[in-house]
Image (tube, rainbow, N blue to C red; front, side):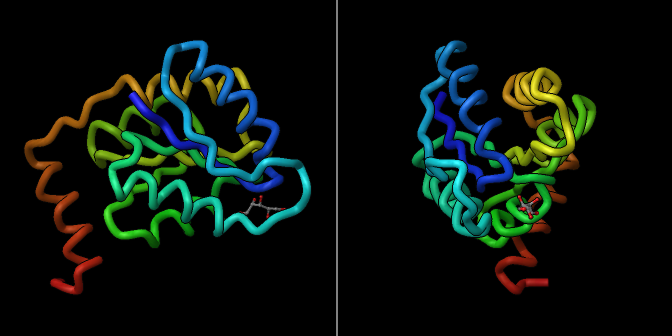
Amino acid sequence: MKIAVGSDHGGFFYKEKIKEYLKSKKYEVVDKGTYSPEPVDYPYFGEEVAKSVASGEVNFGIIICGTGIGISIAANKVPGVRAALCTNEFMARMARSHNDANVLALGQRVIGLDHALTVIDVFLETEFEGGRHERRVRLIHDIEKGKI
Ligand code: RB5
């Protein structure tokens, strides 16, 4: 499974740790930046990861900024992307099983590193339930297409 990671400076430290963690678990990792702790603008990195998910280059994306808020808002502007900001395992499980989220957003200033890694595990290991949730996810993309 291939995963794109991206962050701004506020999430850079976690991005580096998450990269190592994913590689240790044999995931293929694509790093979309930022590549140093210098201040940068989070929308660029949310967009880069989101585009790689939407194009099918990777299966999932993980994006990190200080809170996870700005970068998830940016990623969600890319059609086909469902980025979910999760602060615990329950949210990660629901984001996958009900919302079929394809990007996980985390806040480096919000959640401890070990907890973030557990949230990542849950997100990557939970399947979408489909069924009634399929229709709801489709409706989200109908909004994108201006159908509703
Ligand atoms: C950067 O200081 C910070 O605003 C950013 O990382 C993020 O928290 C934005 O939502």
